[in-house]
Image 1 (tube, each protein chain N blue to C red):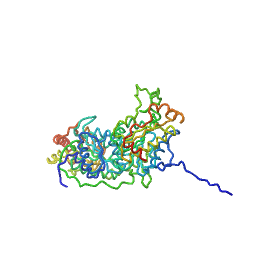
Image 2: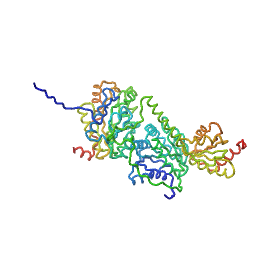
Image 3: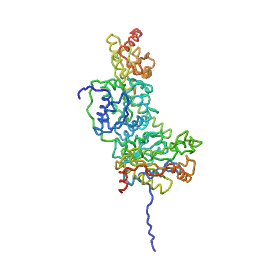
Image 4: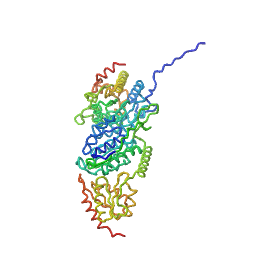
Length: 356
Length: 261
């Protein structure tokens, strides 16, 4: 496949189509609407299901129903719409059906605005609905990575029978970049044995999140937690640059991570021992690689497009072994490399003398 | 010596589409009748093995444990959306939702209106017993004016809580609806009429004619604080005048289908 100039939202949609998504349900909301529009054209062309729902509440429950048939299913939305989907997501997690959700995050709270933001990190990584679980959360920093992570998202959703959220901020959704799409995978023909397909020649299958008695529900929760643990052990992903000798490590994901990377590169070029750590899985948070770096680095700087949310995860991993500073912009303001460079420069100058 | 010849004729048995399990429904509740009618229809139409049921939140929350079909349990009010998702992926399966009045006419109003608007090719069995049974007898969107419930202790005040909603009449106004009727489960004659309607609703779906819904006026002796016979009488005397039985929407295609055997 050749590289072509692709808009993030279109790339996210087409990547899902190439991954063999069988049904898409969504509701228009800026800044992800091009994704839904692309699906509205392509899915019927391919004989697959597309439906514009009456609300995000309905969309996620359509996704839930379709996922119960064992099909690869997806929805997409942006922050306020994702809020409306929390109910359905909790049922999906409690029923263990595979679902992919794309969240092109915008500025909040409330109606907020339609500019790029990472203000929903807590919402997407902590739970996505009531109950005891984390969805798998993937944070792309480019159009190419958005394509690659959507492909991965479907595989992980199937592997763990779980929700996988791809969280792109509005910048990733709206910008155009050269990227390469993977070849087309056909829609899967076989259905998993747990799927609802009609009880032909077998006892009926049921899919529900209802467990009335306390102990059986505790046991189900233990099962879910064991799955969370397996995901934590196997699926942590990150991108590291110049961390091997870094005294200051900058941590950022998505667009904030990408902008920070430019600032780190400049600091490196100027001889500062600064490293870049970009989480790709926001949950599970890539603690396995970050934790040893806390024994090496003198300080961390977390850069986000919010008031400081992922910084909590970094502090949990660092466990007080080094100071963890934060720099963020909010409300749809995207930081520029220069301002992050200035913060790096200030912090670096305050580090204790090297060799200690 | 003569031998008496005994012949047996089986007149009543459990439908294949109903599992041999005890239900949790209260004595005198009509959910059991509604379940049985659906199961008999699935058997008679030979569609049990390609049917997928969607249970609601409410007293019928465990319906998927009683029907011998593939089934799932939706979030409160969202069964029509879930059924849509299933049907769009598996259009040759028979998909039905089973919903109470709180589920369908309050929290799930948007979802039921929009399956009707889309003419989604699914069937809904709507149990209207004018009360929230599962949570212990609170006012429902279909509670009658003046009806005492645990959340309308002085009787439903229309100035405070508005009027009970007539869902069959409302949904009949959508062009996508193919078959919308109201029946009752309070006596044998009406139960037989209800079964005929349920059968036609499923047949309409099998023919791909659009959205079908059978509203079943039902009793809740526990929530109404009545004996089962009193509840049947109350339904007849109070509910039917407010919710007249009848056919609210029968499309030309469904009318033609009804004439075919």
